[in-house]
Length: 168
Image 1: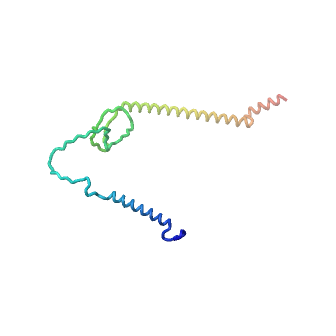
Image 2: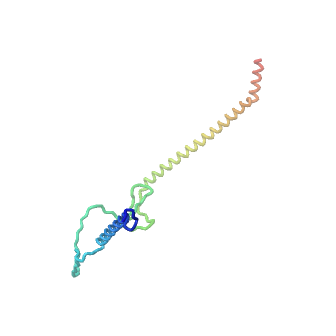
Image 3: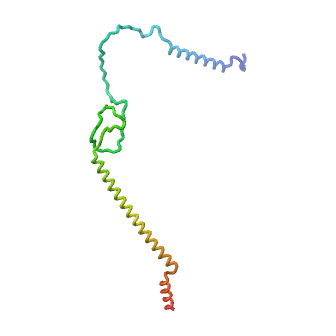
């Protein structure tokens, strides 16, 4: 055989064939190891007569317990709880009143809000009055400016002419 032969037994083909054979052997061994059950294996079936009795067992553990189903509630306002209409673990219906809070804190909050609103309304009215006064003053100033730009009133023009005549 010559070294230039590209025939059936080239070095590349022999290397690929060897690699394929190794992969096949490894795959077969893995399949056999995983799926083969031993007939002389460690598990032996045992039968026992069934009798009725009490099962006693104790379990010790440490950790935190929590419920599977919980409901988180977001209350609109806070305060002191006045009444509680439901017990822990009791089933409740949608819309059912669960608790009430003391109204004194809500009453004082309402009174404070009303007072703040009245102060804001008075400040608004003062601002409107100031704006109206400023607009009137601006109108008068514009009128005075227009008169001055036009040479003044007739009386002012006559006075100015008389002063000019006297100066000559």
